[in-house]
Image (cartoon, rainbow, N blue to C red; front, side, top):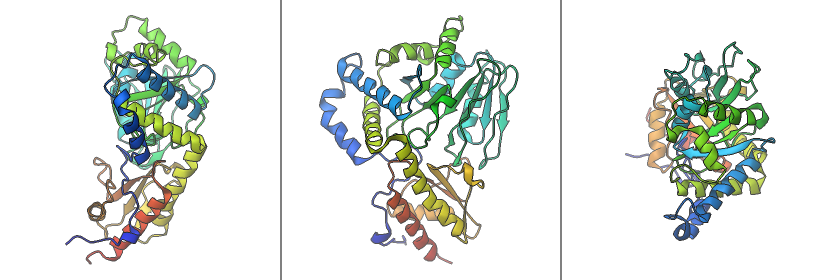
Length: 371
């Protein structure tokens, strides 16, 4: 028999997935209003090009881009960007920090046969690794927020060999965690997390040094597939377009979300909102007799992906199943982590009060579980 959670304990919106994330109804309504004049039209013409231009302009405003930085975009998601970086951003050798699934995937892409084997610095899930300046490294890479574990790392430019780039995977951080863009050369992401959109695109803020690296490698004679050529993405982005037809729905949802965040106060507002939401879960877990935050160091606990461990007397999978039966979805842990935990997105679209209601629902399940 399914446990029925009282309606007064339920969130107004039960979507807490870490990807794809909650899309606000206002974004969907805004898309519906323009769908007939935008969807199914040429991406080389004004309606779509203007949309791309708006996205680039709003991202530049959100990130407070330093002088000379640009927003570029291309087809595919972060997985495509890892391959593009191996072809067109790493000159000889990278250093990759891995403390979860996604940092590890970039490290794998960096093992391309035309590159020297990367320096890989690993840390156990739930903690973070830190860069180690090393001779011969021309690119340092790590996730701003590790989506699989709920650990997040500071962004501080690595002072290594002259010309070395600092490259940050921001897919689950972009739009929800404040930072200083001047500390990175590349801040790349897909928009289906805080930025409330779908997949199909990658975007990146790139510094003048990163642009110079892209152009240098593209002119070097290295073979680069056109669909993964960052120089091609750079050229097309300056024309407010992508090399191939972009995911137009993704662009419009993203543009709507950016407008909403900026209208509410920008990245500082978003950061405060996600920290409020995540603190609800961390404070509850720290006070609980059966739960604890998975990330031990409070300074490394993600504001946007909260992972909560349960002791062996509690079946977290059963909690997630009961939540799902009551319309509260996607609180399961990352599939490869294999822990007795819940993983809850606290992205900027998620109402802090819905997180409070989620905690009430969890407490109800715990109080009424079969002994």
